[in-house]
Every structure is written in C-alpha cells, then in structure tokens.
Length: 154
Image (cartoon, rainbow, N blue to C red; front, top):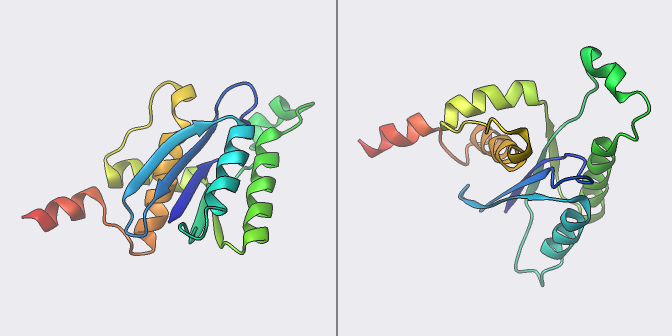
C-alpha cells in the first residue's frame, strides 16, 4: 500500500491529511487526523501482523516562504515536527519516502485527476494528501490520469 500525507499541525484541529492507496493505486481511505490519532493510526497500520505492507510514503514538504516568514516568528512549528515524525517512522520501519513541493504538485494534480481542492481550508487536508499520492502514483506508472482513463474506455 501507499500512504500520502499532508502534514499539518494536528493540534487545534484535525489538519493532518492522509490518503491510503492499494498497490494498484485504488483509493482506500482519505481522512484528517489530530496528531495523536495520526501517530496511533500509523503505528497500528504498520504493526498489523504482516497483513499490510507500506511500500512508500509520500508527503508534502514544508518550506518557510519569504512572504510568510514573519507569521512563523515565535511559532513552535508543529508542521515540521509532524514531518520529523514521518521521517523517523520511515527510517525505523525501512519504508522509502518522497517529499513533494505543494507548488509543483497540487495545481497539476487537480487538472490531471479532475479533483478540486475544497474552498474551506479546514476540509482540504485529506484532498491535498490524495492529490500528492495520485501525482506520485502517476509519475511512477501505477495509475493513469483522468483523461488517460477516459480514453482507455473508448
């Protein structure tokens, strides 16, 4: 299975988006978590008696942009802490991972897969994770775009 993650802070609201895909690229789960629920869920999924193999984890990388730098002054930066947990988890379990820039993925992925981000940011994290996952799966030849799928039906 493949797991895609939009690593939000997950403290004040469920802002860690997760999308889980089968080995064939079928979406199995899309959900938003608080941090503790996310940690518990990921540890549980990886320890489930060998029934489940996590083949790759894809997540949105985090960068402080110049126009947002002042907003980070005094912040504890919970999103990079979430990313640190994800990387540590991957190292511990021997799972390969890929970090993707949101600006490189989200716009093109919305067009390629005909999926729009919700206008309410509170509800967008699982969709963001899904788009990151679909984009990586497409780049790695596991799934096709919406247009490729439609063309194949003809």
